[in-house]
Length: 291
View (cartoon, rainbow, N blue to C red):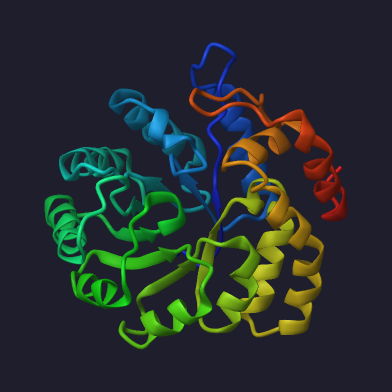
């Protein structure tokens, strides 16, 4: 269910900061039509850190209705408080999400034992498939392969989004988990090689802007068509880089707004893309074949 290109969807907002649900429907329909293999709602790229409980839960529920079962939906429900993560994961279950994505607790810097107990507590409290999310460059917290191994033994923890960009880390995890444990890339620049080395898909920022190309590249890589995947990925490499010239999701939201899919409004403390980088992102979009 969760293989291929899973879009870390931006959350469209109006100029007053409210969620723009009309634009959200447009975005969802766009990605279904472009062949994306699934959507992640309220992840890092969806500005989840700025959502309060009620609107976070409403966003999950309304997104599920808009998707209408056409493609899988993964709900971002991570938090640096275990109680908060349990609450949000319960909302995801109630909304009918196909799985929850739980980032490692940021800022707190827990031990590996703390990480294990955190995710174990959430898995035991809410009976929904759960995907671990390791992105130490963002959280200052690194879930090590031995901790992934321990957590993989819990029945409803089904996989990990590994966003270190380190392919050696992928190999270390592969050696420790069962073959059916889901391995998703969280680093667009290395996704192609991640899949060719046995990964199952990605949760992608780039797919917001080039969904068809990302889906086609990942389909080729998963089928072992390495040359085809490389040719598609070569057109995307500049975009992979440009979408991180400022903190995610600043550049990608600007890019999506340039495509006319939603406004570029963001909530503080995130700010719109600096004008200095407009040409950089626009050039990368052109290189990727995005008008």
